Image 1 (cartoon, rainbow, N blue to C red):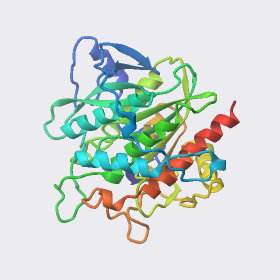
Image 2 (cartoon, rainbow, N blue to C red; image 1 turned 120 degrees about the horizontal axis):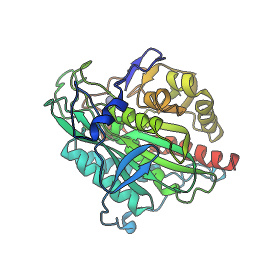
Image 3 (cartoon, protein in one colour; image 1 turned 60 degrees about the vertical axis):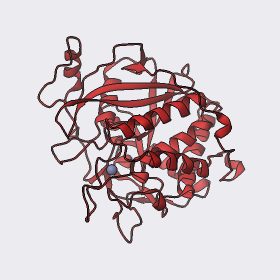
Image 4 (tube, protein in one colour; image 1 turned 135 degrees about the horizontal axis):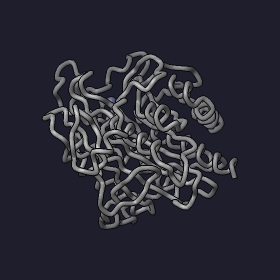
Amino acid sequence: MRVGQPNYSITINSFPVSLLVFFLVSSLSFVDGAFAIVTSLQDTDSFGAATIVKGSRLPQQDSSQLKPPIRLVSKDQRSEFDGKRSFGYLADVCKIGPRPSASKGMEKQKKYIQTHFESIGGQFFQQEFIAQSPYSGKNVKLHNLLIRWHPERTRRILICCHHDTRPFADADKRNPRAKFIGANDGGSGVALLCELGHHIESLDGVYGIDFVFFDGEEFVIQRPRDRMFLGSTFFAEQYSRGIPKWRYECAVLVDMVADKDLQLPLEGNSLHFARGLTEEIWDVAREIGVKEFVPEEFKFIRDDHLPLNEIAKIPTCDIIDFNFPNPVAGNIYWHTREDKLENCSAESLGKVGAVVLAWLQKRQRAKK
Ligand SMILES: [Zn+2]
């Protein structure tokens, strides 16, 4: 993501995907640096408006390998999000190494995500699209990963993150071409959703939940040539163009949520586009005593929530700690080699996950 001024118009990745879909029918035509064409043609299912490829089944994960949950917040609040187990998932994806779009690392992580969620009862789908590689200029396949629970419920909530990591540690002063692990920026969202998934099947209420892992959030080597938010833009375009059987009533994006020194002020674009939702989440944090959700407005961050808000018109809140490691030092670890497991914590993942889960539980109770 990037920090910026309020974004009141569709300025990011505003390439008209609707025009591109036209080209799909004949071939994988490529037009003027266009970033996305629908390519999924086999074993399809509909996901909102999107045409998607249903993922092939992998062997089920042995559930005995999963550690038992540890209660991290008050039992009265019902959340039993396990920060330690979430951190275990973070360690696993960091072990894979860098996971930029269209890389072997990403492929490994994709299989990890699929195996994990299928083992805990989620339906796995992928939404494939084509983007121009910033390395070679050639077309490569990118994938948003979709996990669905309770598909029969037509009122739905989306929880999302990005699963790609920055191609290089390009903000690293000593070596801007160094490997980038992206424990916090990329890994933390994946780890949080991996743990959150354990609690969704049993979540009674009116809402069905979908998780989406966006690809191409930062498939970027050279700014401003390379566009950001490719996956969320594609997803939002597809959703907004169709007549889905259900609607997303709101969405929550998590990004950079494992920082040891967690500080989560209210993000500007979230307040602008989804004030009610954003305040609801920070209210839940106050109710369950997670004081790291600071009820003060912060910068406007450009992140995957912008296409969801602007194109798909889904009110979307971004939960993001954009001072890594902390407000005093500034955001000096961001996009550097310091974005590593050692600078992340189970406690932080546990706190953010507890708030998201408690908010989901409360919403299910309230809207029955
Ligand atoms: Zn980033």
